[in-house]
Length: 322
Image (cartoon, rainbow, N blue to C red; front, side, top):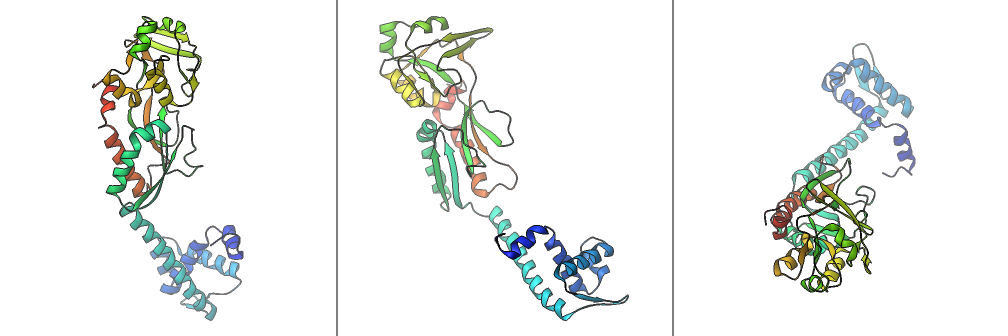
């Protein structure tokens, strides 16, 4: 019931109204404060105080009390009938939620997915998931923006990068290894860099969502740590565009394995400075607000995606198995 109604405002002022109703209804059923207290694992004094508070709130005597007996007043009998309906609805609501938690996944699943990773690898998995759980529908947002899971009302999101400390649950799907790549034609024309410092003389595609990568690339090899200022005629906010620019022989780019894997395998791209690692390390995570009371649709989707992503071919390259 909306709190804009008089009844809603009244309940908002008394958050324990249901507790008072439970106390009264139990006494009305048992016609005994002592028996009601025993049933509710409370004390007679506490139950008596709750009933008195309810009567005070209502401005009506609900029970006639003597030292030996308890009896409902006429008003109490009427109110007790309504209270039983309220408590039955309360129990029904609990039962419905309990059955939903135990039951088959269903309902709308709202997801936020990075554009490239989502389109290349998640769309097919989502289709498989929907075939396995036909009562689930999916509302997917493909965006590289950093969404607020709770504030934007998403059930789950996929994030790529280094996750900060957070109260959300983050399950790692895979490493996201990024590589310096270029086309054979570019390397034949401009020569292959032998050291990270050589990148300063090359044309480099700068992806603005990598930390500082629009101006500086940081590479490590063992104890060596080199930061190189890079330049280039093309800067963008889409990792697939970086890959395409490299494929067209225009520049060296930083491209994650989940995009570059097949091009590297076919020889359309070549890894540059293969002995060096790009810093910082990165991972792919499935995130959701809480592990407690997780809806079946979210739990099943999380388990499904964690298993299926690890079976994709590019994962073997990212974690060193390929």
